[in-house]
Amino acid sequence: MASTLDLTPRASARGVGSNADVPPVYSWTAAGAAFERATRPDYYGWLEHVRAAAGCTRPIRLAGQILTVEASTGRVLDSRHTDAMPDAAIYTACGNRRATVCPACAQTYQRDAFQLLRAGLVGGKGVPESVASHPAVFATFTAPSFGTVHTRKVKRHTCRNRRRCDCRAEPCHARRDTGLCPHGRPAVCWARHEQGDAVLGHPLCLDCYDHDHQVVWNIFSGELWHRTKQAAERWLAKLAQRRGVPRVEIRTASGKTRKVAPVRLSPGKVAELQARGAVHFHAIARLDGVDALDPDNVVPPPAGFTVDDLVDALRHAACQIAFHTPPHPDRPDGWPIAWGEQVDLEPIATDGSGEVTDGMVAGYLAKYATKSTEATGHTSTRLTADTIGDYADPDGDHTARLIDACWRIGRPTTPAPLTQRPREPRPRPGFVQRWECPDCGTHTRYAACPVCIAQRQAALDTEPTKPATTNPYARLRRWAHMLGYGGHFLTKARRYSVTFRLLRDTRIAYRRHEHQDHEHPAASGPPVDHVDEDTTLIVGTLTFVGVGWHTSGDALLANTAAAMARERRTTGREELAHELATTSAGIAPAAA
Image (cartoon, rainbow, N blue to C red):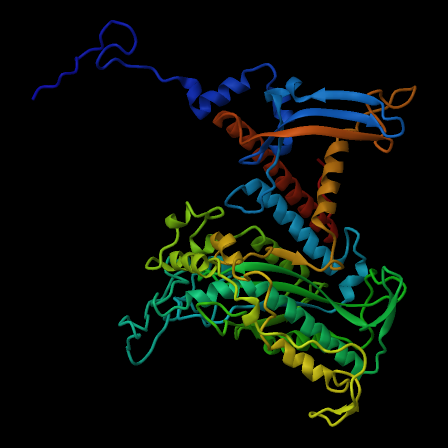
């Protein structure tokens, strides 16, 4: 059949001919929108206006009025409205920590995390430099095994960079008898998996793998870490008592005095989701002392406490702590929660002489602070009843079964009537009749034997958790997109280091005054537009307008400008590091 198209376009109105050549609208493309923005007379003003959020992939747009008010009198000194600004909005970065969502904000978060973690090891940013002499340990706590998964094992590394390891791996799961699992699938794997293989972390048999236990372990892993930290502190307190170190008497905020152990643990941890979807923790544990005059002060531990004592305390706590979760309709006895067999404890050398240094540990933990579930191949926002069907499947792949387990175990349950609930024994206040402890034979009038209270405390750590007033598994549905883990990815003790807020406020103050250092004041005093910030307040009545850039061209220009600025900063750091290295080596740098 012959074609019905004309051989040449018709000389009629544009788009009328059957094969008329319609020119595209250039401003609809990203390059066209960027060209249109760059040719405007206010382009450089717009570029300076969006500089704070230039590298963000989805900035927050705010609109409203900003007032500069004198604090003493309440007089309005200046008034600005976003209608007079470019795009009639203020752009602010989203601040998301996930690198897959916003690389620029995640890089800022990673650098802040590095400074925060490293300051807790060597000092600075308001932390005393004496912490460099405190014993510190880099600890890794892993999850137990929930089933056989594909792994990559290398007995001896010959590569220089572990991140790009190309060493020959051992067979995944080699066995002499090529048996089958109860479901008829092979229980062996002779493959030598390469780095980045898609099957790494996936079970050999999906039906044999305990997906329910893994998601429950993820949701209770925060409680397991909390109990481990308490057990390590109790072990250190007993060690101080055996060595004759007296307890310290401090004054609380309410004015009362209490005696505490002379040593305490100041940890900072980062959670990492493995390829199999189980979370494990990388932690920095620092040993501090207690100041009787100022309990918030960071002081060295008592003499005699070394890094070996800290390693023993953490290893003892990891082996001792285990408990059962509350009853569930699918599992009346609950699930056991304990650490896995692999627990690595490495001393941290702050002087750079050891294998594990402060910069190496801080960089390693800061890297994982910007990651989420990317290692499992699943990325999504919070799931609801409308979207759960797109990700959960009881007969699907490994990730789909984990999400289905979260949604199924976290379903609402009907509590038992009050008449059917077991009553907890409540001890009577005050003294009781004199009784003899069956364990140690001590006669006492206390409700608990004061001699063997330590052994009883250790036994309480292995008992099931107290029944909560609400369903403790309901959080699994809220965190189904995180495969059950609902904790923060970076947490620290209050005395370990500074806060993210302090770092962000310092950055804001620096950006606000970085251009004022080069300005010269007038002969009569400071410039008129410079207002003393100690006596003024900035009051903003801003409302949310939207998320993202107006056009793809604006995003292209803003991200390009931010990338060029990051490249200049990186080049400057490299040149400064090279100059410092040259100066320290005794070679005078060449004159520019």
